[in-house]
Image 1 (tube, rainbow, N blue to C red):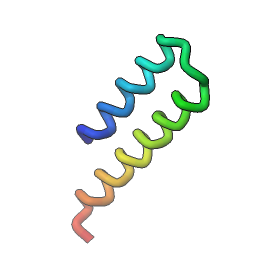
Image 2 (tube, rainbow, N blue to C red):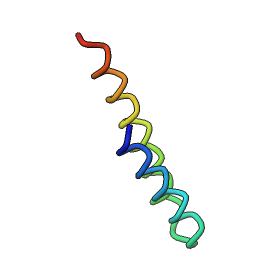
Image 3 (cartoon, helix red, strand yellow):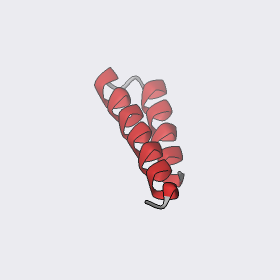
Image 4 (spheres, rainbow, N blue to C red):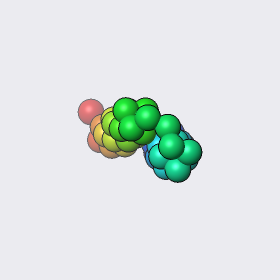
Length: 45
């Protein structure tokens, strides 16, 4: 969950700095995958 927060912060920061859109999108995708991974780890399969 903490990693997802850092990635979202990075995506917002890159967006404000005017970096290419693909970098921001990739950070959002990685944040989503991180949240999904955190959810799967809490299931305790």
